[in-house]
Length: 113
Image 1 (cartoon, rainbow, N blue to C red):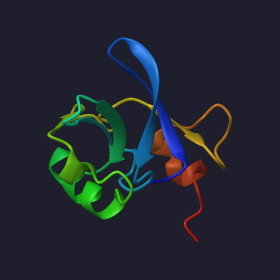
Image 2 (image 1 turned 60 degrees about the vertical axis):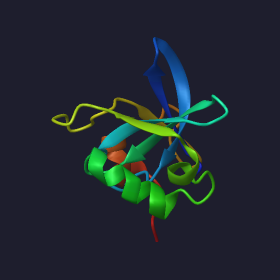
Image 3 (image 1 turned 135 degrees about the vertical axis):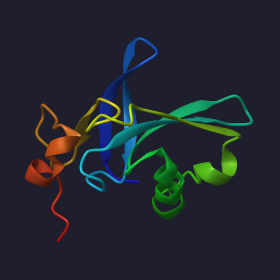
Image 4 (image 1 turned 45 degrees about the vertical axis):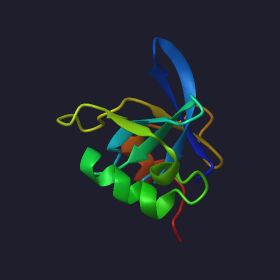
């Protein structure tokens, strides 16, 4: 998982959420809500073309948490017709202190080279 996290609203409160695949799909961010057998609920922002692609991104990028195999339920949140389905801002190492919009990752995000 990257060193990037997102600030977003969830259940009426501001929260910080890890980001998987930042810059991977042009700012198309989705909120993933994972429910585990022990009752925990964890959140993750994933960049993917659409919700149907999120499991593929999780399978290839989520090497630490392994959510696909350990969660009892995964819910994907976002509005399909929006350019940025789930609103958030990215923060972390190498990003401006004010954060950036996921839509501007190519302008200000991490260099892939």
